[in-house]
Image (cartoon, rainbow, N blue to C red; front, side):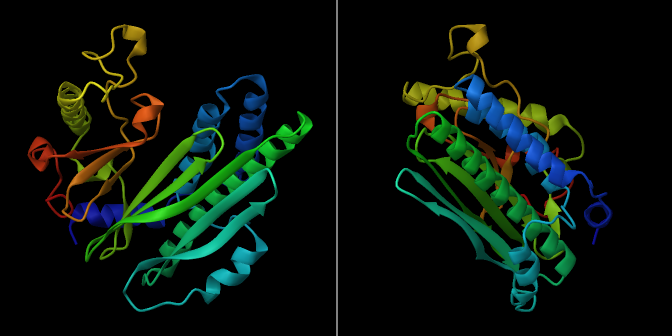
Length: 299
């Protein structure tokens, strides 16, 4: 194992755990709901609240969070199947009333030798799902206070990549009543049993510039082929204030696909009108080859 991987494993094992996480979860949900009562941009704001307060905190391996008695009692019963890691459906949050419907499926990893790493990721997924469900219940209370209405949410997961080296998991949340959606990704090195971050793939921050330039080029090319491919970038939008994408974030959502290619991901509305949906861009390895630490993951 090279020095970079050793450092990553140490970081995975020694990340400090925020004791206030449970409060952060509740506070993020409450603040997001309050925003809904004030304006129609609730879901976008809630997404940012959860990203900052829940998903980001959970990313640092939430250990010891009291997610639920069911989880605490059942996690020990998830079968271990040697070194063969896989993703299974572990728990489901449901609400099935006439005008209020929620169906949120929680994934769980099983089969990793590092059971602490496995359990921490599974706790993170439970925290994410609980946050979605609690936000839905707050929505339900608000709608009822306003005289009733139809609301619904569907959450789940998809295995994007599963090969000898990489396991990539997408978790998604979709409103069935207003079109809001959000996605999160984890890319896991199954051999070394660690979570791969975007910065960990590169020597320095130069990747931000090169990847962003390539995505802009792809957007322009797609737009020239079909003007309905309308992105919020300079060269397509007419007004500077309409530009929604210049550079990727240092920790932009991503995964590595089965061909060993880096895929950069954006949520709906993030870089284009809602009609474009959630977007993904495969980055040619030639664009980033000089920025990579090595070719362990990206081919």
